[in-house]
Image 1: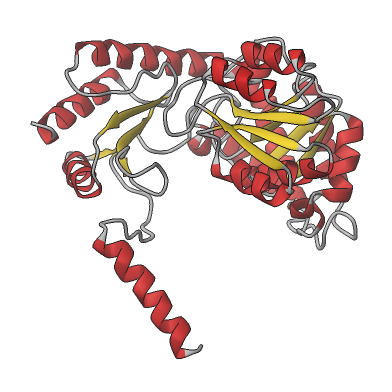
Image 2: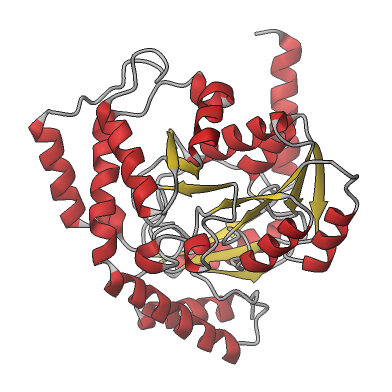
Length: 378
């Protein structure tokens, strides 16, 4: 490595450390879980573990795809998963990716060949933002969940200009819901398409956890939905739900799909097993939503600056990199895994403690969290 590059690396790390923003990898924190995306507890579910173990022992599904799906990696187990996804979500077709990030990246980047403009919510996930940058389309940002601003941005389009609106169902760092029906109505008024990232809604929202679009009856009014398997579903990976034509288009133009080794057939069979369990998890979803309701009752009694979220993602704003690190340390010292979120994940000045609620959290644990936060901010 050249000396100049080595110096540049060290200087970049020093600057980040000086700003109190240097990150390092740690094993998953112990204590009471308020930080993972395992909303329904499936990552630790013994039923799922036994079923996956049986699949592995059976040996019918190989552990490796052996190549990209356009060469040697298109195994019947992967296609069976895609058929299951299409049926479950009332979609014409589905295309599986190695991660939710890869699905968003491939979809949004490929849209540059179909639309001239991408109109994105300001808090859109980083994977979709990166996909938009790669698309070559003009990118327009509208104020977060602001329908008046979205309407204005759509109204600025020229006659004949093609556009797609990109939003999340549940925003990962604020925890609020997108008004999907209003977004679909505005897009249709201006002949624009809608793309929805269902990452934090999948498995929880809607009938049997089918997501926000199905819950609102919008599955036939959006161009594509992205679902992920690494949050409420307890595994990893993602998929694009779309028309058969758009699936064929992505197979030909989505570089994060074309140039990636196919997903493990054993993994695909494991994900399909999760979808056998999802309709049986109404009790877990009800427990999770009950915890959300109780948490919001505690927020209403609190003097602390909690954000107005009605989802399983709750955030306490604590501006300042060093201050949020100190507050987060106090919360952690009380045996609570609720982690500080700093720039660049959120803009500087919008640092926060992010709390993820789960079906397996108890009211006593939630009470303990509020006590620790009050102590840290005293």
